Length: 321
Ligand SMILES: Nc1ncnc2c1ncn2[C@@H]1O[C@H](COP(=O)(O)OP(=O)(O)OP(=O)(O)O)[C@@H](O)[C@H]1O
Image (cartoon, rainbow, N blue to C red; front, side):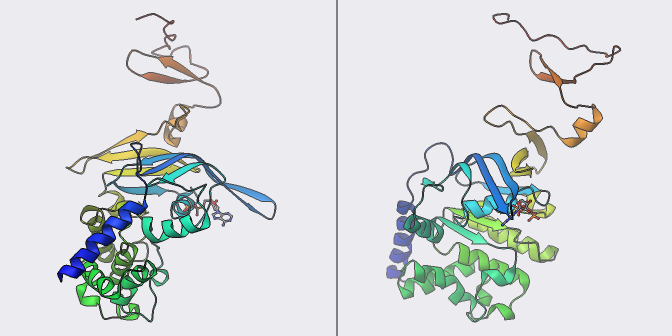
């Protein structure tokens, strides 16, 4: 690469960072009691029902959940395409509820990148891979030579340099999605959002696309949020957040060795959603009893059987040790 191109690239990265105000200490992505209600023909659907989520800069996070739990709605809001009905959503210092038209456009161009599930939706069919990757930089007014240099570099980093002069129709599904990752990272976004990016691919293609997302995270510095039904993806990230009925319900954290531990998420108001099998197994309905133990809180069915092996201990009175 020429010195000029290197300077252009460095300047591009720097400008991209400077355009986003600092995110503060609370996280790069912060959703607080987020609500999204859709109204169609007088019928209301609460797609998000008070969702809390904090994602730190540099994380690679998988978002999972049953169909209809609100995953795509959340990603649409974070991408700046959709507006929440209530609550708070901040990404890299941008208040997503208060952004004006110009800020929203700049936000969508430079702060977030997006990869859709449908391969055809990510790329223009009449442009080569290189031209597709260079296009978002053209909108961001990057000089022509620097655009081509960076596009070629991105295709190299993501392992698809051999695709540069081919059009999408001449690429496999996995290659198309990897080019889509390059397009989404062209303007050095702080956050990369992907909605089921491996959903239309076989296992090998899915692995390649996930490897590209991981490179975008580790080598290009993007914070990645990926919606997936693919256990291959969710099993490889450090943190998997599960959504249920428009809220985050559980999180699985994995260590270096890959073993994971599941946690239930307590929201800011102290609410938690019990897993359905716990509710069934212990016959929890309507009212339940909470007991304060020395190192944990117990939840008991409202009506305890007389033979219960361990009756609830009353909560300690204020001031007791
Ligand atoms: N534009 C819309 N108008 C009305 N209702 C909508 C709209 N978009 C989504 N919904 C409803 O909002 C709820 C959440 O949908 P969403 O697409 O966010 O779920 P999801 O978890 O992404 O599901 P899937 O895994 O099937 O993609 C669903 O009940 C859905 O029917």
